[in-house]
Length: 225
Image (cartoon, rainbow, N blue to C red; front, side):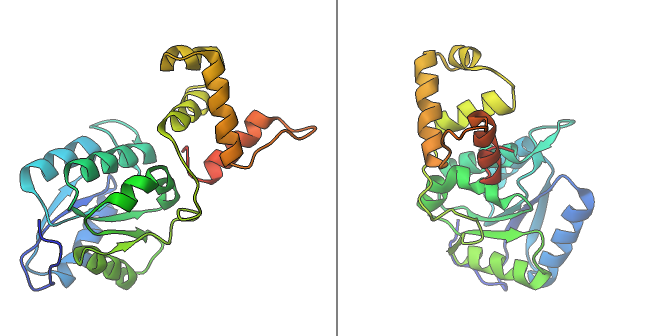
């Protein structure tokens, strides 16, 4: 895949969004700026991965809140998982994340930092011209992530911490069940909680439930949906 491309060249661009109106609107905007480009659309994570694998595009413009497959619910976590796979398999793929859930990208900060292709963010609140600018930057192989709140403030996010958060606050499991799911001891689960709470600056306060405070901070920082 080419890292630097001009608008005059024939590009292959995949656009991903599960809302038909947004999908067609994004393609229309891009087509006006890249009239010779070939556009391919996808509506879920599985379909996107198939398209990227078979077509080897120059650029992917994707939402984060997408379904994993057909007739499944859209969740930002599906987009995050897809991004991790794409960056691992295609380290030079140029990527634009166009989403209202950009703060969730903090979960894969290290993956973004090490990605060799262009990687830019276009919050859905941006104007069409601003979005096109981010697309152009990505096609030039540039990285632009300053729109992600706190991404460069050193918050260390370990996979096992995210797993604990997901099991606790999205599946409603208690520590014993979390330990069984992760095949670790309850003591280790408590250790993860301690490390996570320290990273989030959450400490015991009289009259406050530390678990609830942890959930609030984790959601505010985009670590869970």
